[in-house]
Amino acid sequence: MRKLIGLLIGTILLSVPAIAQTAGAFNASSGLDLSGNWAPLFHEDQPERIPGPALVDYLGLPISEGARQFALSWDSSRLSIPEHQCRVHVVSYIYRGPLNLRIWEEKDPQSQRLISIKQYISTYEQWRTIWMDGRPHPPENAPHTFMGFSTGKWEGNTLTVYTTHIKQGWLRRNGLPQSDKATLIEHFIRHGDLLTHTSILTDPVYLTEPLIKTQNFRLAVQEGANWLYPCDPVVEVERPPDVVPNYLPGENPFTGEFADKYHIPPEAALGGAETMYPEYRLKILRGRVLSSVVISDHAAPQAISVLPVQGNVHLVGGAGGNIVLQTGSLGALLVDTGNGKMSEQVIATVNKLSEKPLQYIINTHYDPEFIGGNAVIRRAGVTITGANVAGDLTDARDGAQIIAHDNVLNRMSAPTGRQPPAPEAAWPTQTFLKGKKDLYFNDEPIEVIYQPNATTDGDSLVFFRHSDVIVTGDILNMNSYPWIDVDKGGTVQGTINALNKILEIAVPKHEEEGGTYVVPGHGRVCDEFDVLEYRDMVVIVRDRVRAAIKKGMTLDQIKQAGYTKDYDARFDARTGLGSADKFIEAVYKSLASAK
Image (cartoon, rainbow, N blue to C red; front, side, top):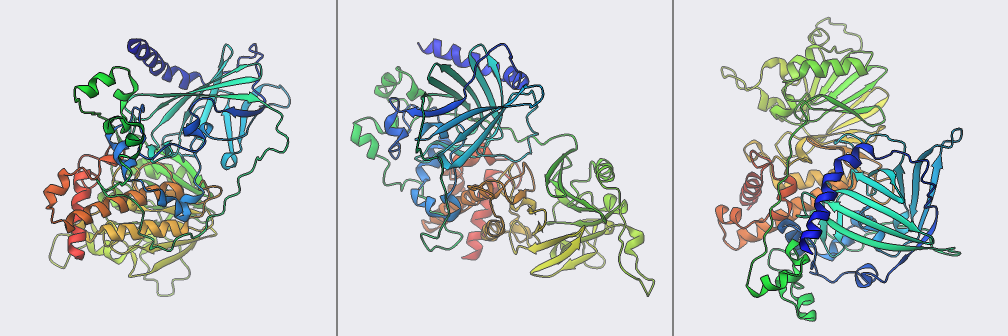
């Protein structure tokens, strides 16, 4: 039996690239149609799907050690945080609960060729599009959504769907996480008035094997059914913005509740791939310990890429830290310039997207990944200002202006007689000391907002108010833990404060999705919900380290305690400031210094 299951999973995994490449092919001869209103049948997994799973019930799920630690730290009170109240279930989980499901086809009005299959899911008012016209999936750094990006094709009487770009969500709504690196394969099969939905979820962060689930629906005329889910978050509990309810390691009071109630070994309730198979009962008797290994890859792209974000703002990737380009009638503005290794390609990209020259560069902070291209790229621009009566303005001849907080200039320059760490041509030409620097360019208000002692002592957020885009530098880093440089004034509390500032500015469009977009220092475009999950992670790790310091634990002991194990497979860069080791060290040092 186990060999048969293994062969099945292997076949599924080998088929993923083919599905990804051919998804969207239209089989006109299939003659199949999933259209109609569908109601779920709950004869399978009813306790999980209606009242909800018990706390600390992870039995039979192939979760990693990181997923287990994440779930054990999860406190349901976190859902009282306003930004969490209207979060929705991701596409791989939303079909599991009570819902009304409507399916219909969208066809070209002239050729009647099938363009997409649409779904409306009453839970959280979710709209889903399954593209059937062969279009490709978006680039890796494109925004993620709760429903993801889906392409489909008919395989006989089965609609097979491949989905990427899914937000972080739940494997099970008792705290078990699904990461934003997960991908999904689904099969929709109709038998008269019955619809079977099979899903195969692959998650390199929180699963050690694919997770396969099925659910059934019946065609129904649902007069008077509830198709709406209005949600308006409110303040249920007054708490400081840097407080995220969570259980410290070993302090979850519900760890043994499910196991005791059903008289099963506690380690079985904690799940893992082994608990999926009949042989696991023998392993429990022999005292075998669960283990799992997850390897993730955070390799950066090697070529320049351009992704429209929103309004007249673009993300330019592949040159080190993310670069943001704003274009308009007056010319171009850049936020950061990358590591300097591909500056000529960045200049070519700016010239391609803007008919007029580069006028401004804004540096979010001092780091070689973000200011390395300053000198070369600046010379390709020009500063155009008002009348120059004195005739002594040099910026117009030297190139674009560089705007940053004063501490960025302090870090790049040096006292007289000493060798500066950066060439003078790369230094900011205009600085500010506190608060924010306002700029109006290309018919858009732009705010450069100082964030004291975040990852450094010179961090700034850049907010494009008309385009509704926030650029964060490495305050938010979707490829690693935050790069907190304690030696350059960075602190964990300052980083949390800066993340909360982003949450304060950002406004979601619908149910914690879309609206204000956020461009991190590295990685994909985000929205408020993505920032929320990242903020929660930083707060939870801070709380664990702070509790360990109170117990008298040393830095080495804290590093060995595995306090980031639930996030390492997603964010551990393994080396440098973005590694788990350096992140823990930065949290420890900034807390010890504050004390």
